[in-house]
Image: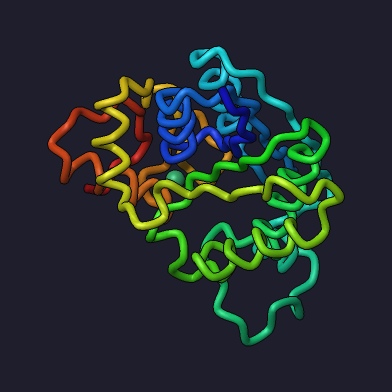
Length: 218
Ligand SMILES: [Zn+2]
């Protein structure tokens, strides 16, 4: 059985990824990243999902990591003239995958699995297939152990949120434990980009949404 590092965020995509990877018979080590603007519900969701799948999850503290919106609050000159996608964090995936690679090398693991979707690349230049290919090339060029190569596996990179909901249902993923909202709240806001994408996927799927929304607009 080969071991893989899985990046877990507490959302639907990575929760589904975790269950997908279990079905592929990988032994899993999950990694999650904690940063100040991360909603506490998302971290709680991550812990619950890892525990529901009986997978150990390393929590890496990144206290310096801020969203562009938070940086702008401190310095109005920051990102001047740049159109910022909601929830944008500079170099997020470069940092996350560098750390995933760190754990891959520490544990002698040759596989890193991430749950990015096709829609993630819209507005996020660090979520494109080209970016991930570059990361894979880079980590393999710097690792000491020459063989085998570290593989970056992105099984959902051409999938939509609706595909993920369907896969999740098929795999029995406890979607009610997941958290999608960008904001610190008791319930999903139902309005942010991430909540809207989630709600739309559930609506299209015809399946019952189990998460609570505080102000449903649709
Ligand atoms: Zn929201």
